[in-house]
Length: 114
Image (cartoon, rainbow, N blue to C red):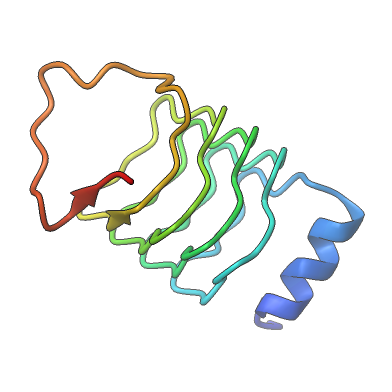
């Protein structure tokens, strides 16, 4: 089976933005433009997503456990039912929050918003 590499993924994204249900776990996707993409139920666990643009993307039900998202753009992103266990959210741009932070606890070393 062929491995999905960052250049191949970028070619896929240039042609279409539907990666729903794909397994992208453990890849180095630093800086990839996922804006407007359908990433519903996508496995992004353990993935380097630093500097990625997810503006307007649909991440419903995605697995972001152990992902590194330093400087990612999550403005207008659907994060409903997304799992983020031990996800590194450093200097992430959420824009106007699409969810409420009440009753949530964050570790300062893990969650820092610019």
